[in-house]
Length: 242
Image (tube, rainbow, N blue to C red; front, side, top):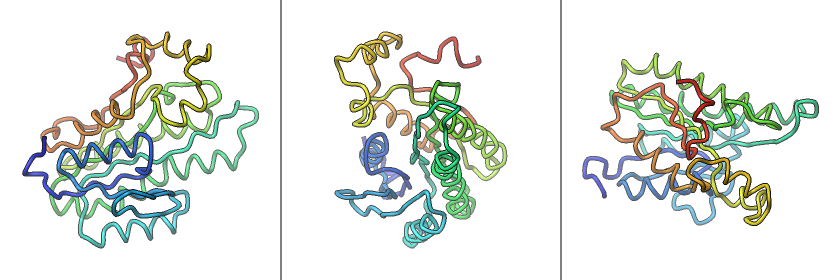
């Protein structure tokens, strides 16, 4: 359903060209927003802005382009990279890349949009963390940066609430994207084991995550901030703190 009050309000979505980001952009359109997507590949994305978000200068250029049409008061920091490796073999270059995409880019985007949010007395920030922030093998760089993103989310919630700006994080569990399917063939024993470990006995979809993003972007969600919403089919039960 489209809400007249949100008609033509813009939402900046990083990494919105595919997977969870693309589903989020589509849900934002359905909710009556105008998504502004920044990604490395933006083919077939209406109004998409191409940029290498691991590069500070290119990110700044893309943000300037996005804001040329006026302030943007909703932000989805979705872009990220996994770089799997065991702790002994995680390279420093991989670690630096994870920091750049999973942490630095989120901070840079928030700082660029914040003046407009403060002037409007309203803002919604949703940071895409991961269930891996709680710990997962072969994820030193990924887990560290996704946990760091949760820490930043909490700080932003404390500092920005007085300006009408909320900041929350989402922690997806296993989500059926193209990348997931390539790494986990449907009939593989490992894939079946993953599904069996999920209490609801299925892998999530990008739409599952987009639905959670939609709630946190809504103007009516102003009393929810500094929280982590795990979209994981119950996998974090007994793992995450109460």
